[in-house]
Image: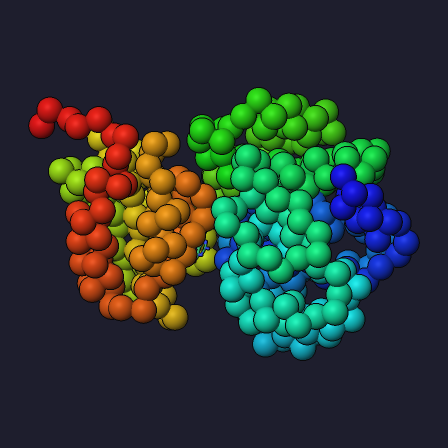
Length: 344
Ligand code: 5GP
Ligand code: MN
């Protein structure tokens, strides 16, 4: 509470504010950043939102999207660097370790600005002056809503902010299906509805904006690139650079694919390996009783939430998948400690 009072003092006069979020931002990352930005703008601050990379175009409807700088875009790098150097306050939203923002991480570590971390991931690194952090929260957007209310600024919330925040809560709860969908999630969402958030329109923008190529890619991946290991309660997709090229894959096109593997009856652990320019990007998902974040952190230089984590590998796609299979086999007692043994 003391932290809240001194944070409140910090934002009580106009400041230069830099907001950033994790690489390849999802709806929670961008929604919390733009929700926060729109609120801080209303309070009279100068605000710049910088993402470390690009993000899916199905998020482009959020208010403030057009002013977002992409640090990885050579046209934006210089101005984004200048904004970071000039900042009085730096907000780090929806990530808990500085390496999640690429080069921006070390720049933030060296900065003299006051750093604020608002996040719901496990094992946060100690890099911020103010931390509004809770793993109980389903989404960073939920924490941003609560922070604004605790600051006594509920009256500044509006439809645009509510829609940014709703998007993150909707997607980080898997459309209100994951075990993180608490009573508080529904209470916050009820308030966002009161503010005028058009929830079915948001669902439409995010979930129903497929290109034909993307739909064909999903069909191809399910029919040709899905491997199911029933005895290990595990299934995964391995997608090569060539596959992505063939379907003219764009940022966001692999989003949600891993869930098809987890949706299989009896499957407790699912993974998606996609071959990118800078190595293999991995998404892990697990059923509620299996903690996949420790596995991601220990073996794949990653982390995240108990049932939704990510990681990376510098091995080839084939070697990464082989290593994954043997690691699941070796660690199955640990991973599936509480999973009942099935008859077959
Ligand atoms: P996704 O599979 O959707 O990319 O990520 C799932 C969750 O794991 C997200 O909360 C994301 O922030 C986290 N995550 C993804 N990749 C990494 C990574 O390389 N390192 C860490 N620490 N977390 C990750
Ligand atoms: Mn999140």
